[in-house]
Image (tube, rainbow, N blue to C red; front, side, top):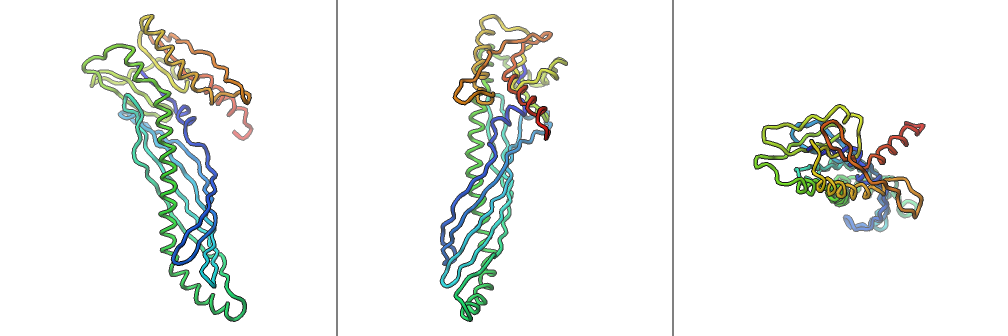
Length: 300
C-alpha cells in the first residue's frame, strides 16, 4: 500500500498572503512612541528529494514597515523602520500523522530618522542640534528592540497558522484509519517514507523493504491525495475505505468553484483498477480546476 500526498494539496491548506496593519503605542527611552506597523508576507512550500523522510518546509517571507513618531518635549522625531524576515518550519509525516518542528526565523531591522521637529526659531535649532546625536546614539538599541518585537510577533502568528495547517492535514488524511481497516500488519512491518519535489509518500512494509514502484500510469493520474493498494480489498473493507475517503473528498469543497451561498457540487469518488493496483484518487477535480485556471491565465 502506498499513500501519495501532492504538493498542491498541501499548498491549498497553507496560510494565504498577509497584509496586516497594527497600531504602535508604547514608551521607549522616556519618549511616547505612536504610529503604525504594516506587515506584508507570502507563504511558500519547499519540498526536496529525500528517500528516507516524508517532510516539507513551509516558509513565510515578508517585510514589516513601521512608521512612528517619538515625542519627548520639546522634540518630536519621525522614524521609519524596515524589517525583512523569513520564518520557516519543518513539517513531517511519521506514518500515522503530521507533526511540526520548531519555528525558525531570520530577520533584520534598520531604521532612519525622517524628520525632527522642535520649537521655532533659534531655540528650535539649538534643541534639534542637541537631540539629533542623542537619537543616533540610541538607534542601535532601538533597532534591537524593533527586531525583537518583529520576531516575536511573526513567530507567534506563524506558529498559530502552521499549527492549524497540521491539524487540517491530519483531519483530511485518514491514513491511520485506513491501516486499521486493512487488518493487522505484519509484526516486522515498519513505515517507509520518501519525499520528491511533487509528492510525500508513505508505505508500510518489512524493515529492509522499499516503497513499491507504482505503475507507469501513476505519472498521469495525479490527484491531491492518492491511495494505492496492491490487490483488491474484500468487499466489506473496500466499501468502508471508499466511504472514509469520500468524506475527505467532500471536505475539499471549499477549494471548488461555487456560487456564493451555494453548496459545492461534489461527486463521490470511485476506486480505479490499474493493473494489480486498487486506487483511490481524492480531489482530482480540484487539481484539474487549478491546472485549467493556470493554463487560461494570460500571465502564466
